[in-house]
Length: 453
Image (cartoon, rainbow, N blue to C red; front, side, top):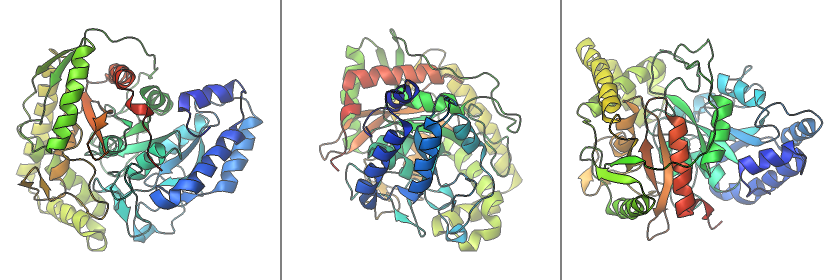
């Protein structure tokens, strides 16, 4: 039962074809079988899980996720359940209140059974920390699943969860989805409301679903999206998923998003997918917007946010996070002001560009999944990476445009590692992206390929 899609499980529980307890027992058995090797779920309460499942079976459906198990990323406070942020500073922390996202999950009927692993405070696109260690990629246990939602992606890919929540500032939903042959949606800022510390008008950090299929991602997205007065960016309209044919899609194809170095193994897989897109009848042509200033915008404004969040504990966090925080603390007003101007310019450039195309297609990652013991690639296609931020610019250059994007399985390298394609859509255009992702998944059949665990 653990291998079925979330949409099938939700429908089956609602129709009482099988019970929430049966679904829960199946997933708990799967967790017991594979999690010791993958280390994706780092806090688990099986007794609570079964009790919640029994309560779900005895009640009327509460929402679209009724009876479905989920473990929440360990950056989200869960009342009465340990939340560590992947930091030794909070190794035994048990919150008294739920985050807004957890509130939404419970209201939709999801059963929260534990937490998924993340790097310290979610910083960096590799999942390891001093509290729980590293999470491993189910497709190759010597490789990373990416990050910072690496625990979420690895758990879904390994069949331990039907879907999972992620959060994405620079790449943290998209990279893990691509490394694990999954669909990962970074929505328009405000589509899923958040209550982050610091500046509530900052559009960089968003929540998004990670799932095996586009309909599964849409199911979780529908439960999480919608307005909330506590988030000043929250979008007032509600999201409702429906899947229809997507003929005549105009795709702008960018092999390197403005000249970024890309590993040849990634390029080879994506070129093969381009042929598939053409065979589907989509119009594909080389084109991309101007990304000048995107790296400066992202790195400066990320640094500003980190200075506010971690300035007081800068000497107590991992070196890369401390370096990023000190950079933020060193910034002057003129450079911050210019980064804010660039953010507006980059949004406008992408908006205007997408009046001529339905989507921009580009790499999700510059490299295939790398060694789990490596914090970040120090070189991509022969080009040195100066910091841990540079290797995921394929995603961070999209973050600063405030446009939604989805990672979709694109194929596998000769070594059997998953590669993803990133589809960038119009502002608030998540439904069109999910429909296109579903069409691509249907044509390639890649979502049927599971890890050799």
